[in-house]
Structures are given as C-alpha cells and as structure tokens.
Amino acid sequence: MPLIIVTGFPTSGKSTRAKQLYDYLAGRTADSKHRLHLVSDDSLSIPRTVYDLAAVPAHTRSANASEKDARASLYGAVKRVLSDRDIVILDGLNYIKGWRYQLHCEAKAVRTPSCVLQIGCTPDRARQVNQARLDRRAAAAPDGSPEEPYEQGNWDNLVFRYEEPNPMTRWDSPLFTLIWEDDEAQATRTFAALWDAIAGDGRKVVRPNQSTEPPCGRDAAGDYLYILDRETQYIVRRILEQQQAAGDEAGGEVRIPLNDAAQDDLVVDLPALKKLTLPGLQRHRRAFMGLNRGGVGLEAVGSMAADRLRTLFVRYLNDAFENEE
Image (cartoon, rainbow, N blue to C red; front, side, top):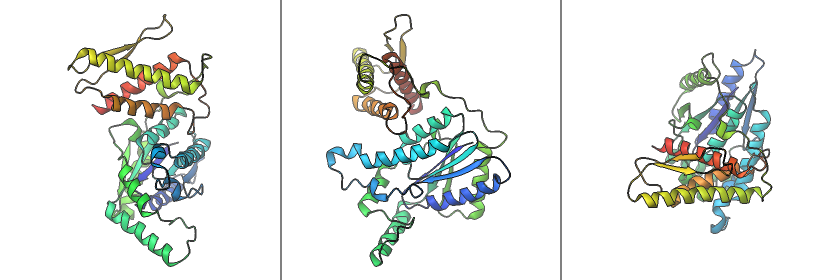
C-alpha cells in the first residue's frame, strides 16, 4: 500500500491535514487487512530546533548533522513499516526534492505506490500562525505540545529553502493539493481522489527502477566513499571536457567507458538546449552521493564496484537532464 508524503511551509497546517487524512483512511481500511501508520517529527519526538541553522557555524550549514539525523530517524521509521499491506503517511516539512526522491525510491523498492500531498498556505498566514505560537510560549511555559513554534530565523530560513513539488517529476506525482481555506467537504474529495489514484482498482502496477535498486558488490581496491567520490568526479570531468571540445554547440553524447572491456560504453545524453556548468553538475553529483553514500536510511547499500557506480550515476544524470528539459 502507498506512501503518502505530506509537504508544505512550516506552520501551514500540515499536521492538521495529515490527521484528517489519517481519519479518512482509517474509515476506508476499517474492514480490510491493511494497516495504517502516521509518522511525523512529533511521533518521533524530534524538536523543531534540529532544523535551526542559526546555531550552526556558517561553513558547516550545508551538512547540518542534526537535521540529517532527524531525516535518518524519519526514514528508518518509514522503512520499518512500509510494505504492500501498509499505508504510511509521512507528516513533515519534506521540503527537499532530493529527500522526496529518496522516499519515492524506497516505495518503488517494495513495489508500492507513493504520492505527495502539498498543503498550500501563503507565507504571511503561516508566519502569523508561528508568531501566535511564539507569543503563547512567551506568555507561559512551553508544554511540549505539537504546537511547538519555530524560532523566527529558523522559520524564515525553512521557507526560503522550500523546494516546491513539481508534478512533472515522477517522485512528486501524483500530486494532490489542499489549501488553507479548503473546507471538510473539499478535503474529503481530495482524499477520495488520492485513494483512487494510489489504492483504488485502477492504480498502476509499480515496478522497481533498476537505477534505484540497492547496489551490491564490494570493490576491494579501496574505501566505498572514496570510490563513490572518485567515479562521480570522473564522469563530471568527462562531460566538461567534451563540452569544451564542442565549443558553443550544446547537446550530444558523452561516452563513459567501463573497466570491464566486454561491456559497452555508457552514454550520457546532454541537454540539447543548454550547456552544462560545473556548479550544476556538482549539484547533481552531490545529490546522487547523498542518496548513495549509505547514510540516511541506506544501511543495506554497502559498497559498489566502480562500474556499478558509473552505471548508476549515468542513469541518474540522464533522468535528471530529461526532467529539466
């Protein structure tokens, strides 16, 4: 059964909608063998402060350990219960598209659908909600309720960093939206459409994606993370070298040889409408490494042979370039 990823601005009403969805699905599954789970920061006792970069030195903000640990806890909680008999609602910020991609891949790995429920709310209204919670906290001792506020600087930073779901990408689709003003009747209609898309009779059969299967095999020549860094850097360098040789002309193919001479070269299909830049390629490289470094929720990945790493990274880049066009 499906994984439902709830996303939206901080204090936009995500938890309220997630509970409404939980109640709706509880009614739909009351007479079935399916199990229903609601996973959230609150259910795992994760405080809002883990997302606060104000206390983190500027040079380490991109590697905020507390936030990564929080995501690891959420990922582990989802992974433990996700199966073809379980419906999992993940209530949280889920504001990073790479994180939503990782969750989508996990659902695919167990052959269950996933979808995104975006809670639409203007920044001004969400800010008012957070400010009201700050005011209540200032007036009385905090009680540890789910209405814990974000510090204002933390709230501003999270809104700034929020990456909107894109229904054109496979990991953000199908995408359903509820806005602040939607009443109970509209919420029920949206939940019904969500159910039909991912749990109804017409839902699509989910097949694992070869590029996101847990890799295996250990390269005895060195440490896994070193090999991961080396092979992805090699492919980035090959792409930039070929682009430089092509001059102003965009597009084309970049052939990536494998160590196994019996295998055909891999092919990176470059975007036809624009030249790739080093910062853009490094962004894709970092995202791929984040998904495959065996850190957040990827305990079973282990190490991969160099050829396997090259294959996965080329597939990742081709998917990314196709979605950007």
